[in-house]
Each structure stands twice: as C-alpha cells, then as structure tokens.
Length: 398
Image (cartoon, rainbow, N blue to C red; front, side, top):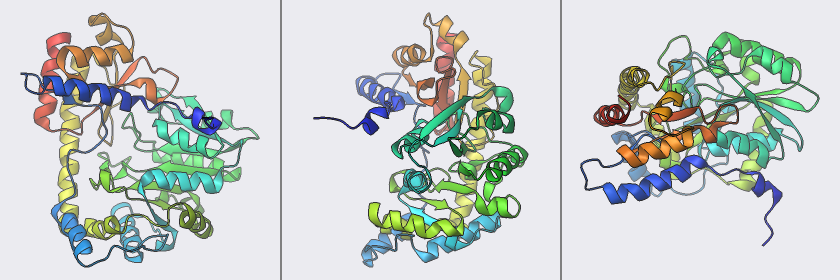
C-alpha cells in the first residue's frame, strides 16, 4: 500500500518508543526490590478532583451526552473567559474561545486555518516534537532555530528577525516549554509579537503549562499583552496539565474574533464537537473548591522541582536553566553518560533503564541542535518516587 508523503514526513515519537521498552521491562521487574520508576512521560500523577468526577457522572446520568455546538458549551467558554480575568488579568471575550478535543486539536485547527503549503513557521529548538508535525500536516515547514540556555531555550527577537524571509508565516512558541520547563520573558514575547504582527504574520503560543507557573515574572498569558497585541495572538491551552484531565481529551483555542467562524467551519467538518461529557465535567474545574485543590497541587509540583533539580545538579546531571513552570528537568547528561561508559542521551537513557530501572526521555524527540547532550526528567511523580530515583541515580553516578 502506498503511504502518503505527508505521513512519511512525520518522524517517530521516540518518547513512546522508550515508554514501550520501559513498560516491557517493568513487567519483568515488578516484583523485585527495584520496580520501574517512570520519569519519562509528561502526565500528572494527580487525576481530576472529586467535583469534576461527580460532574461527569451527573452528565451521564442526566443524559447530557449529545452533540454540543462545534465551538463548545457556552457556559464553559464563559468560565474560561472569567478564569483568564481572575488568574491572569487578561480580558478574553468568550466569543474568542473555541473548545477542542485536547490541545492537539486546537493546534491542528489553527494550522489548518492559517498555514498554506510551503509556509514556514519558526520554532525554538528544543521544543515539543508534535507541534512541528502539526505544521507539517498542514503542508507547512517547521523551521527549528537552535536556542541556548542563556536564552532560556526560547526564541529571541534577534533570531526571529534573522530567520524571517518571504516564506515565513509566523512563529510557534511554548511557554512554559516542554522539554525545558522554561518560559519566555514577557518583555521578549512582546518584542517578538510586535515584529511578527508588523509583518502580517501570526504568533501561536502553546500555553498548556501556564497554569503550572511558579515564578511571578513568567506567569503571564500572552493574551494579556497590551491592546491589539493581546487581541491578535493565538493561544493553545488544555485541561490536561494544570487541570489533571489528560485522558479526557479536552482543550481550547483562543483566536482573534474574525477567526472564530473560520475555525468553527473547520471544526464542524473535522470534529463535530469535543467530548460532551468532558465539557460538562470541566465546568466544575472552576468551582472554588476545585481551584483550591489545583493550587495545592501546583504547590506540590513546585516542591518537587525545588527538591529534584538541585539533586540532579549534585549528581552531575546539570540543569542549565531552573524551570519556572511545568514539571520537567532538561539535564545535560554528557558527564553522567561517560561515568556509565556510554555516549549520548539515547544510550544513557537505556543504560539507566537497564541498571537501576529508571525511565527517562532522551533528547532525540525535541530537535536537532543537541539531542545527544540532554535528557528530560519528568517530576510528575510523588516525592517518595523522586527520592528513590535520586538514590538509584546516586548508586551508579555518585
């Protein structure tokens, strides 16, 4: 059977290959003194809080399970709008908010609406691999621009200006970023968006980890930029990370008002609507009791970061930039790999898996600039598990 060139352009999702190997080994070592510890997948260990669970059950019991409008439940769009105002000081009209089947669908809809064949979208290297494949699936070209720790692994205005050409359509940023957990400074974001906007381009920003921001300077939505800048940015968000609803597959997209009917038309044809049950459940995310629980969990994620990053640095797994959000540590494994007699992040990851039953993610997924130098640790795991992981690392690296 002939496979489309579009499909052939999609690279393997290596984190899933590592996960499969880790799961297979985990079955073999489950009853040993060292069962597998998974620090490789970016999924919160918390699940939806009680009010959200009960809201889902109630929707099913009451028969609230039929199609919603393609743009989503009006009540949910309003609650998201209110949350932007109370949490981020951003004035986001409900009419700009489109409920989607996860952030993945949000980014797909944005790319299908805005990216033409041959258009180039500038992205930082490293970055989340699936984002560039959404650009590719829309027949565009993701242009990965190497970034440095000094730049917080984010694009700068100077690099955007240098890379911009006649084919450039815009930029796709992520703040906080996967795999680094670092955010773009708000003043730099404004400079970039002003330039992109002046060129008639688009600024897309993945803000799915924004709720899990730990530093006041960085915890601001691009939608809060002043005036027309905040109105013209396109933000992708999700109920997966801060709201702990990964498998519910629910997200949203914020677009300029004029783009809403365009996205609606595409969504009607490709998705019909996001999960009705998940939408009714998500209404409960914004109840005061739920928000208190989410803030308590955010504090726990910060405590894990504050413990784990210094331990990695102590063991020679240097994290060049302290993450200000999300639940990741992007560590230079060069020295640690040499201690284990291997070279590069891929072999290092599998060596850790074999020796101490610890699963981490090699840098191969996240770009082309320095994939063999870095591994990503996920701290979306209990403090007990993180301390055990440190003990195991110390047994082979200390």
